[in-house]
Image (cartoon, rainbow, N blue to C red; front, top):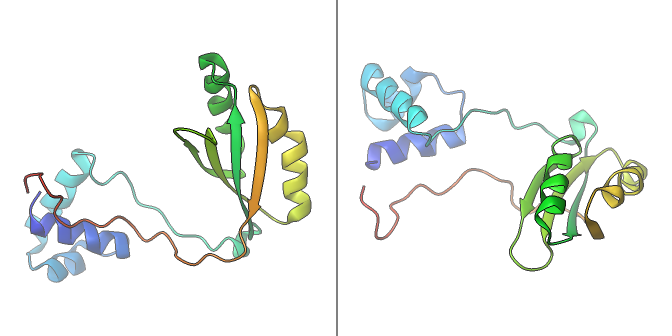
Length: 157
């Protein structure tokens, strides 16, 4: 990956809807080589997809909670828990962590009452769950805006 590829990634992370022509102009290429590079980045798995950033308030999910979950440290319990999370659309991100807590979830629901229902009816009853702790998000200070794509020390390109 060279500097032009990194510049393409930076531009697409800022605006995934750029036309190929506009992207090519921004990175100093003509349209055809730019398209080849984008396709190669997609084929190599560097670009995994394109998404719209949706305002949570606009879709009735402005109440966000970070939830730490302890799950029994048995393979079957962990696998069952992780599989069950796939069927809960309110869980918008989920991470298995080293140490404690074992998992961290980001949940987006309409309001406190909706979260309470989810907590009672789903989260605390999932297989293997031994503890659920909630931190209500007061304010988002920094939005996710993509990954830095500068050179990585010790790696070619």
